[in-house]
Length: 118
Image 1 (tube, one colour):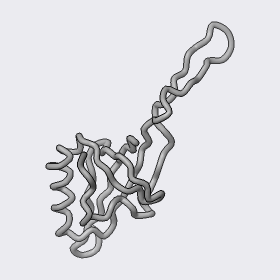
Image 2 (cartoon, helix red, strand yellow; image 1 turned 45 degrees about the vertical axis):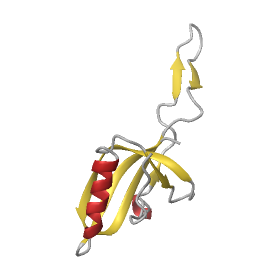
Image 3 (spheres, one colour; image 1 turned 90 degrees about the horizontal axis):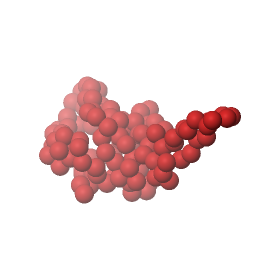
Image 4 (tube, one colour; image 1 turned 60 degrees about the horizontal axis):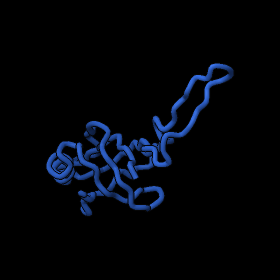
């Protein structure tokens, strides 16, 4: 499994950090009488993580894009990285694509949605 490049900071900007509860991990079943029953599908439901990398030097953008396109096959593979909040090693996968926006001179900002798988 690929590992986040050591030369790149992970999605740790506080302004872009959002973590949600497990998504789609419950199922609701209608009962013939009374309210519907709701239960958990799994004890390991995936969570959505919105992250941002601020002030990334433009020169490192090529490293990020190579990791995404070559190592992760355009984001289809999962990878290991250290959670910026808990400092635990976790398995992530990009939900879709990422956005690159200009920041300070010769720097960019990257925003992306990731799924925490484990």
